[in-house]
Amino acid sequence: MSGAKETPRQKMIGMMYLVYTALLAMNVSKDILDAFDTVNSGVQTTNITLANQIDQKYAAFADQYSKEPEKAGPYWEKAQALKSEADDLINYVEALKWDLVKKIECDKAKTSAEAVSMALEQGLLKNTDTLRNGRRIYDINTSKVKSRDNYNKPTAYMMGEPEGNGVAFELSEKIRKFRSEIFKAVGEEHIHEMGLMTDSIFNRDKEALGNVPTKEYNVKVDTTMLKYYGAKIDYAPGTTDELQKSWEYHNFHHTVLVADVTLLNKLISDAQTAELNAVTQLMTNIHAADYKFDEIGAKVFAESGYLLSGQTYKAQAMVTAWQNTQTKAYVKLDGGAEKEYTSDGQGVINLDFNCGVGQHKYTGYIKMLDPSTNEMKDFPFENTFTVAPPAVSVSAVKMNVVYRGIDNPIAVGGGVGGEISASASSGSLTRTGNGTYNLRPGEANEVTISVSSGGSSLGSMKFRVKDLPKPVALIRNVVNGQVSKSALQAAGRVEAEMKDFDFDGVRYDVVGYTFRYKTKSGTTKEAKAGSGAFTDEIRNAISQANVGDMFVFTAIQVRGNDGKTKTIETPIGVEIK
Image (cartoon, rainbow, N blue to C red; front, top):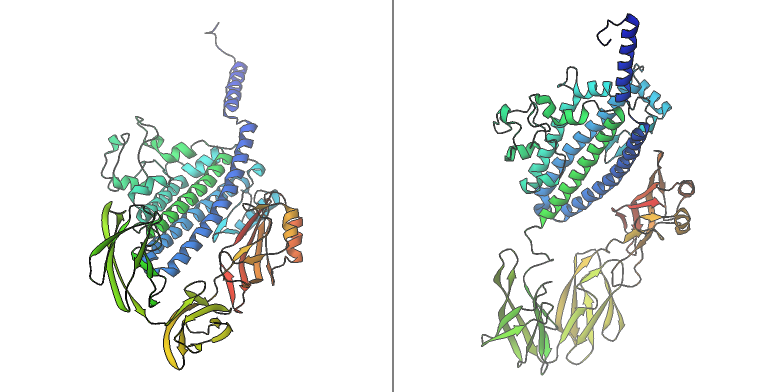
């Protein structure tokens, strides 16, 4: 009976069964769609964290550039070009993501504004004015997308009709363009650490690909230009359909809408990660060829360059910040025989000479391993000192600089009989005891302390004058950027503290800051405070916060003992736990 002719009714039933079977095959499980929603939400949270890290990295880079413009300049220029390319790519992906959802979910809207209004009303968009690093962000709530399992319209939009001329191909070109900027910034040795490999050679310019023949596209290609563009292998080696070999086909052919949105958000995450890694590498390159400590060179630190008769001259010679148990110095005093000194295990070489009255000079060199060549290198040094009858020396009590706006203790010792007096070239110098003074510097960048006794000059010493360093802004109870609502309310204010500063009595008061926060629901607000204390608006925002809500305190202004108002560039980020 299998060969019997079917009736029209039987044919119709058979056709309906085939259609029904096809529909079942194409149906996407709700659990899978929900899983995409979860992944997409996680990726969006990651993007916020990456954006904050990028912002902080550029701020630190700008600070480094302001301190060393000549050295950091070339890398800063590359970073700015990289940021511009990242802005272009991320803004494009964000706009593409919204346009894709808009065309499918808001297809009845006549204008863009009407589509936005419709999306807000339906909960598709959490808000429309989110900016992150100056980039417009479209936070799409995929769980509210009615057509999230639709794949026909997304495929037509991304791949084109006919396939091969959709926006996915423009997207991959922009990704390769962004990678090319990374290539120029960090070099070939780091390019594959940055991700965003499109791995596609569909419809590529052969000259750009090193004139690789089409028939050989399924073979691995390892040229610099291919690395530059991010194209290495086919996705479907051996196929005769060039389109199926492409990254675009692999990612956007017959994929459902919610998967496309998730993938586009992941591309934004990958772009931000690549940007962060590249900028970090550029900052590292500034001092890549340097010795890994603050300063290189032989230095001699003497307890005093002016001795009384009968005293022993003592000094320390070292390569600054270098620790090496094998470090040795070879020294000649007044042109005499060379003497060998060995370091104390901390890179410090102690020198000692016993000399008569008069001026003396010693020369020498320190041998140490040069990390750039792995060979021993000589670092020469020389110094002079004077052995004289009773005289005077001046030294800063705490450090080799003095600070405006506070009392700097100064000690003056020695002398040749009679009363010792001291004066400052600028500011005020007030006696506080026998041989001790408090110096209040003026506006000059240097101040000279002159010492005399019985009307005769005993010498002088010059000090550098600096403004008080900036404090560190903090909020009590915050641990690893997280704090509970009750602990944050209890803290009640933004404070400023001096870290590792030897002067007592230095105080900074917070006189203002800007407060921004963003809830998980997408609400963003900004408030300003005219002191360190939390305002009522800020307290209300904290009391209404939920776990995971982010608060940022930025543009923190402080005023110290010197009466000057300074801005702390590093913001404080807090997450409610």
